[in-house]
Image (cartoon, rainbow, N blue to C red; front, side, top):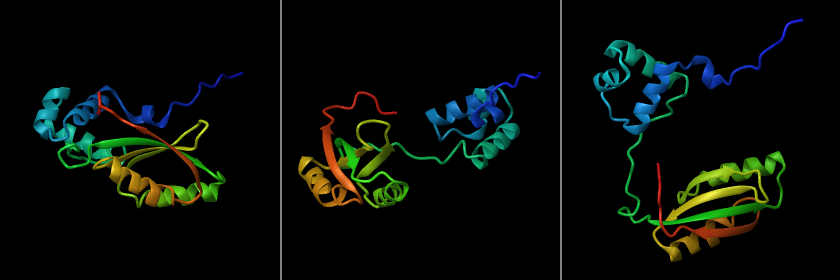
Length: 159
């Protein structure tokens, strides 16, 4: 009788210690040059470039972005919105998921295993702007039955 070990998650199949170090370094500073990255992970530039290209191709690195000071951009008001849908069949979930993409003020949208269906992170200029977004955009999304808002008073950690 052979005993099968559980399959490793896909992320563990192809990543070694150096790949993980590359990902950690780039997550901290996506503007590192290949030479700087090579020094940090203990390889020469050419193998690091090849690994980064593979990590990008395989979807471990989905992109690079600047971290913007949202407060200075006039988007300092943060609200978290619990959304309960009237219908949670696949077609309704798909319709909600598609529609959420068109609301610029929704920064994040997470489907939840909870007493509500989605948790949204919404950024606006102020509470008045948030009220308009909630009333005109979020409440009008497909199948929204109920919302509850929690306003962030201060951001303690934002990675």
